[in-house]
Length: 145
Image (cartoon, rainbow, N blue to C red; front, side, top):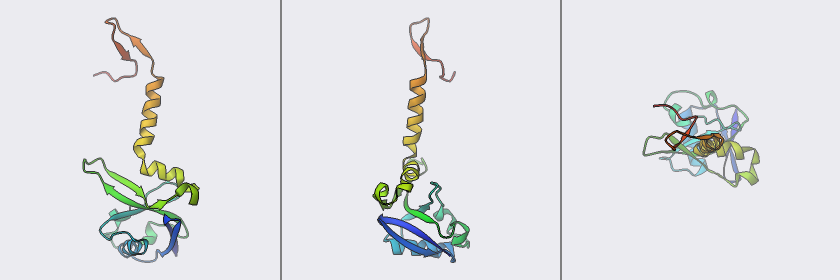
């Protein structure tokens, strides 16, 4: 039972998933050249993040989270200081050239605000403005307070 992890400049390593998750993560960091203190995670082809770090303290096997013979992209996990959640940084470089099938899922995982901003801007553009009796402009779709 194994998975392939993509990282660096078109590098890939195969990992045994028939082991405890804590050992899998430690081996992953060592073989991929990541500092043992850093938090890492994996993303599959669909853009789903596995959440290795939150599950590694248990006694679960790596095979309980990872699908055998699948390819995963190595991500660095950064915690924001202002409690906005987690930020992911792809540790696979030149994705569009080496593994184009991961380009779009990585963009969505690593830049979630970009996707949200596009939706907000398109909604704003589609709103119609009306003049109120006082001559002020207001949006029909704004929430009433």
